[in-house]
Image 1 (cartoon, rainbow, N blue to C red):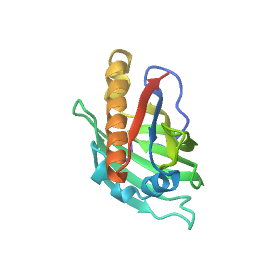
Image 2 (spheres, rainbow, N blue to C red):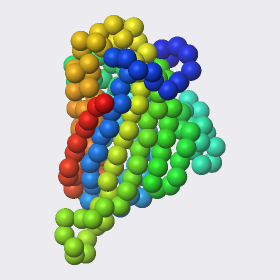
Image 3 (cartoon, rainbow, N blue to C red):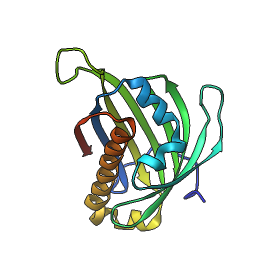
Length: 182
């Protein structure tokens, strides 16, 4: 079940989170795009993602596609999140609206970047995930004023494990993982 109500922009307060993760992969962005839009494979390479189920297929471009996922954080709690694709610009941009245990939106950006050498080789791609949400579970809302660092650290760890898993899945190099919250 969703945490109630439609997804909305997160409001301020300790239960609102703006989280930005970024890393680079030695891989063409088209390959990364294909993997990100094929969410059925995510549980194979993204530790912490227990399951994902498509509930609405969406139009031919993927707009309106909806999937519900269950994530387990590194400190043991689970979050159930439904994401609906609302904007796609292949192969550079994906935006989805979240509902369930968090509400708000997430955006993936894939940008070509220079590789570690100036010579020939696989292109490199910067992968950026911007997650602007607020908690929609009572216990998180209550604990957020004191447990915010735990929640942010848990998210950062899940994203780092996702970056590592994606690199392994695509058999490419990973560099420069970073995460920050505001």
